Image 1 (tube, rainbow, N blue to C red):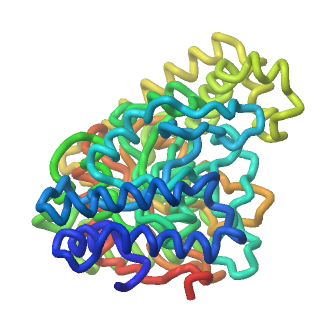
Image 2 (image 1 turned 45 degrees about the vertical axis):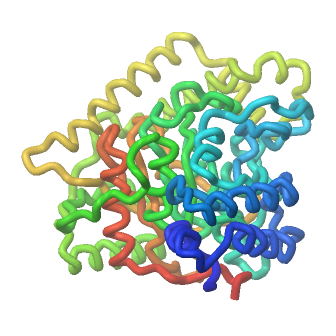
Length: 440
């Protein structure tokens, strides 16, 4: 079989008998054995548990039982999400080593769909900013960040160590690592995927979501996590209308990202998409400051007692944010929450025009993957986490440094599957086929 293989293609081969779950699991484990010592994408790999699950699922499929497109698909789980039988360490030595007694609801949903849990992927400390040990496989010298905080999930998917993975986004932690690693990400509408069993960072901003090779694969995962459909919605009958946000995003992007984005948008326009420039939503000028206030205050509330007792156990960047949150007044926090509600209404208004766009489009990141001292800047992703609207990022080309770049598509609140349909249409026209240097 060709490799890396997509969820959609693997599902077709599993159903037809051209591939078995055991063969798929062994191929993923082979990739892990070959590359993990350099890339550090995994906290734990449950080899025996995955093989047992593959045998069980294989018997189901051989007996004619098909649970959907994730049946027999190996996936990874970001290590801030509870998986029964494993501790949730959240990238910190301060967490408990006690094994969890139950899966988080989103992990349980994957299990009911027949997915095979390979293990838990590396995250930045408490899913915040201090870099993890994970390395970006697109850089043969391994001197670039994979992004954070869903770093291990993005690298594992990019390298074919699993076919899909769970991540989370509070600022930009799904879209940014996916973009840096040349794969696709889906940040759902806020609240559509349960955050129960997920280590919290910010109660008003945390979004569990998914990373996979393609938008089609993300639709398979979304149908499971949202509990709707069969993962195969009908293709869009017509090219989409796209609202191109150039203010701020194209100004703040570096030249290489601007070039890739402009080329991608032109390709979509030439393929039949209607592309019109749209203005930033009202309240955008304050969005980053207000997002930061909510995140800092709510993270401080989560960590207050542990931080007071073990300050030296926290990385410098998260520690600075917690200090900031503890020093923020209740009035400023209330103002930030009020801004968030108003900004959501402003974003909704962009989709209520006389001829509303099917999606907004802009670069996913301001640069390609930077060096290891940072996980990158969330300024292009944080506004949509603040608004709580769905986002899909898809690779759009290579920057001049040979690293991948992506566009992100922002949809109407609650229209996740429709947005994924738009993303799949765009993905087919952009036809990104490049692979990481370490797979060459």
